Length: 217
Image 1 (tube, one colour):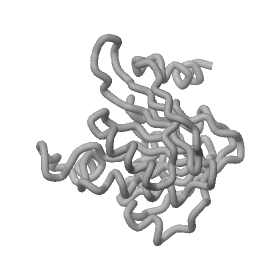
Image 2 (spheres, rainbow, N blue to C red):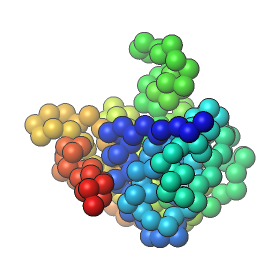
Image 3 (cartoon, rainbow, N blue to C red):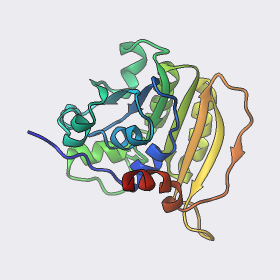
Image 4 (cartoon, one colour):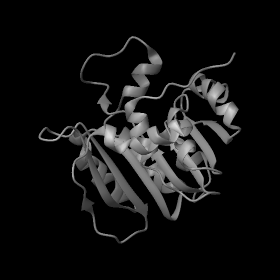
């Protein structure tokens, strides 16, 4: 049965951050039903897309998506636990890895009764490190790494990248002016020696303007 792919603000922020040459291989870790791939492909034409997720039901939704099939993308779905990626898949196969990993912890807060939502929103204390380690394994030297997450996890984001050979190059705080950031977008590069830069905080609407304009053409 044909499925529709949902696209949230978080997804659009992640997708709008990617700017990669045609012909590149782009992997999304924790791709779910493919919303970020759908949005990213609008801004990055003629790429090969690989979505990796532990939930086979969501991968089936991705491959059955009306929008993705209409775009005739070069798209592959792989069902794999992110912790097993370095053992299960060849390394250095991707020009870019994008991801919006779960920001909650299994031991804190209210747990969703819906299994897929619970897996997408929370995980173990080590899950973020598993995502980053998998990204480092998949990226070629010089490959682009983009992650969106909550500011509270920034220390773990930086530590995970540095311990995996990914140099954080840009930090983009996201949120209304004069208020604490609600999200952080981290841009990194495998085997880079660039110094980290922190960009001025911007509202989500400003950051996804490029995507919004592409839909009105």
